[in-house]
Image 1 (cartoon, one colour):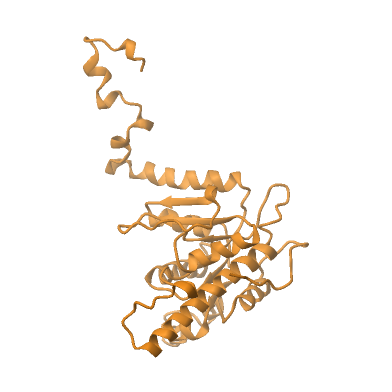
Image 2 (cartoon, rainbow, N blue to C red; image 1 turned 60 degrees about the horizontal axis):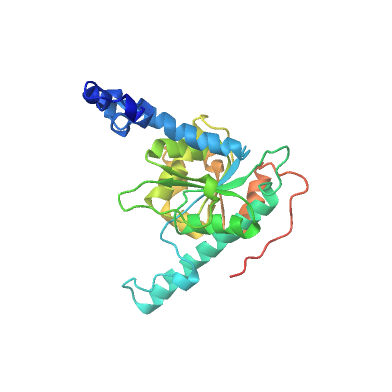
Length: 282
């Protein structure tokens, strides 16, 4: 409102909360009764930007935020030296394979080669550190765009430095973040992780198993970790899942094998994309 239009007579009215434009009134938007509007805004903002980049499909990478590259692996953990070295080595291996996979998928999947403005198989992660950082970093190594779907947490998850800035989002609602993970996913690769990784993996498995989402290849990398962490066969033996549900998941131990399984599982790759193995330096 033009300041010259405010007088002593209408000062109270012009400065009242009710007079503020709703779109500019944060107190109004943050009311409990406006939760539906906030959910819509979280959906719409990411959707508009993803569409503006022509992103039709993604390859989603889940995994632990606690994994570090070899140079930063956690020597502070109070374990015996041998166990500590083994833990660092495994974590660094997972980071390296996630970075390698991010580059392989970006080079061979179509993210670097839009056709009529459309990009397919763009790497999408949770946008934070660890495995997420590694996969975004691999796409960055290749010169490809990638997505970071960050979540606002009490201890503040900062975005890693590698997703495309225009595609680095922040969500308040896990539900809306999960929707964006699922709705464009052409494949999922789950690296070792904790509660968050399990939550995201089983979310996608449940959507596929209940036909709420089209069937996509789902890969768990590091079969030793996943076979020990989850006894999928026992779930089938006890009737908690069907025998056919075991085929929804495949296991492998490295980035190259993960890519081969995705392609064999039906991931659509455009002709002309790179097909030779990649190496990651640094």
